[in-house]
Length: 255
Length: 255
DNA sequence: CCCAATATGGGTACGCCGTACTCGATTTAT
DNA sequence: ATAAATCGAGTACGGCGTACCCATATTGGG
Image 1 (cartoon, rainbow over the protein chains, first blue to last red):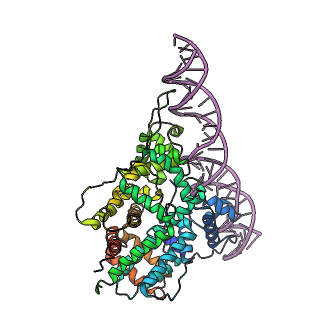
Image 2 (cartoon, rainbow over the protein chains, first blue to last red):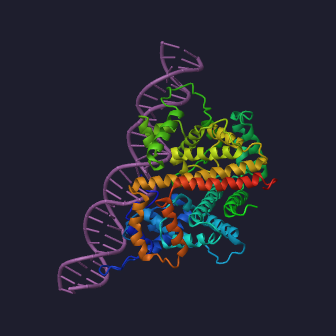
């Protein structure tokens, strides 16, 4: 059973790795690699080939090094994934002045998170709800919390709102990424796919029994000019989510 | 590169499999298995061992059969995953009369979807935004759409609202499942984990630079009596999402 | 009734994977 | 100069999905 997440190792060791606290050894040959270079290679590989293309052997290959050499720097693949997550999280854009109040700021946070997953789709398959507490994640969390600082929410509500918005961004990004992947892999547009599937489906689909599905499905495909449009879906959901947050923020001043 | 999704095969063949349209051959020995039995075994295995424990060899083992025999019934693992997704989707509870209007109905849909992922956590790692169009998925989609039928939304909006709510349920379930997994694997409560991590983190965490993160993080852990509580997180987010939908439904009658 | 046609079951093998173990080569403190 | 410590990496193990192949079982057509 291969490892898919991390946190299994010693927490202190993980923190040490994430924050680069390893003290240089005094004896022995100089290391030919650094943890940073390994993480860079791994991120590049995962970006290019997806999470299924990421293997210790191939990361090593990229660095011109034997597979087992990596284990001198990183305890295992799980910890490497932690480092990768923290790395790309630290690279998110964080503009200091977004005009338009909390709603505009939260919207920016959502959009930037979606971009993060877009740049690094493998992140969707790695991210855990309890992220590795490295410098990148911590800085990101602090920045993002500030988008809802001073708008009348309690500290706990601030965290909850952020969790909600980040979760939404993640879910929407997953839709976008899967949609793209599907198009690339099949080489088909939505329309082409549908016209390939429809004939077979018609034989078995009971349009009377499932009348609502038939009606709404048809309306949606027409609207989207395909069967799906990640941009429109994102905008729609984001508006709803932020409306829900607005209802919370303005609870003391209804209408 | 192992397959993680499906849809790569012939769509017609997939539909045939999903709807059980295979015509019995006239010649040759009688099959010792059925697609249904294979799917049942696979679901049972994935439920028990997680997605990483699901392999063709082990499914075959469960059925007392050689690994390659499965390929007589199913083209590959990707298609088997499709069948598994459709199977468990078809088993969701669908009460016919939920009192309380669209909001109560949508809430029920969200809760039932969360339960689905809770029962079958592997689903979180398999589900794609374009699900296999089998009988289970279709019936589920039709039922769920009916929760927002006749409340003044357009057909397209109905689909968008459902996508939003299902996405939320999925995201919340992911939090719950990961939280449980983490507790099981580490054998630690949130508190124990935190007291193990805190000393190392204190050495590197700059509480002045990241003052908001420090303050909110502390408040949250105290509130949750741990560092997280999936139940409370779910309820909070669901209320916000449904508030956002309410703003859409009542757009013509503000306040 | 026989046999050719066909489908089933499954063994073997290939190329991947993560990583435990081991050992010679290299560097430095003493 | 030498002993201690670390580095790089080869080998090997047990797992994976599945391509390929063939003996076996079953049945339709003559």
